[in-house]
Length: 348
Image (cartoon, rainbow, N blue to C red; front, side):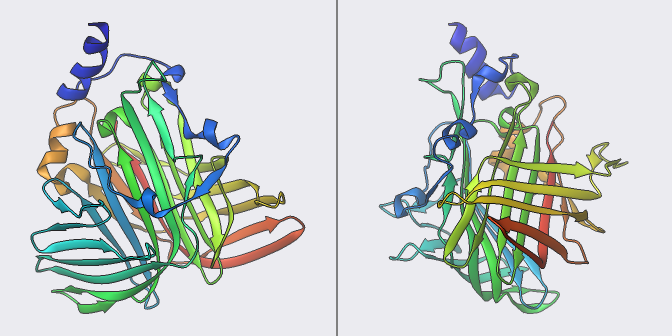
């Protein structure tokens, strides 16, 4: 009954959790100590479609050659998956993976203000950190009560358009990033704060996803990311850092939002060469401030709503002046300008 009191009530009712401490999260960084990353196989792209409390999503980040930046996100509630759970279909919406498991086709006509017809094809291998990309939550490592997983296609070719009422058809031919994420527990129990970065340049893609757990799991920091080129993963793993800098209080939300960012990737290539990469600079004028509770589907609101101290917002940025990725592989150093899209998310 102790497990019922500590676990099921908070997870079902959305209440605050007890303080379990660092030992109650088995970070994917532990896997990465011996297996920094594994390349994604077709089976890794299946929807999990858990029956218990979870948020599972696929997100496509778009950087068009025209300069437009976009995001297409799917959070499912009532959809029909194909037999193998690679694709799904809903009224007016479909996200399908082709037979080669290298291209997604996204079509949506649900919202007349945003009609989507896109093709996203990976141009480098996909990866997940560690052996399965998962961090586990729970006091018994053999029977975890929660999970967090991210799988990435870090460098993609995008074709197609999004038709809006204001601007008509926007050609999104360019580059992209695909992420399949699973939070196998209530979102505000898994993470209190996030930093996300997607950098795309002519020759490199550098991505990072970092979250900090609530105090119930020791305010543990988990960071996954990598740097790739067309056809090649240079580095991927969990030995990265994200530093939100020059923070100032947002008067509406009282969150300390950053005005600058510093990201570092540090590890080794598969061949054993040292890899050090850094991206730092001003975030410029904020693109948007998103009230998550006003945007997400109703079923997600029920997972978070009513919890004291929970007021999730996303602060989105893309510096008007391109930032530089500095990367050193072995003795070879390169510097390349590119486009950064970044989010700072605050939950509790």
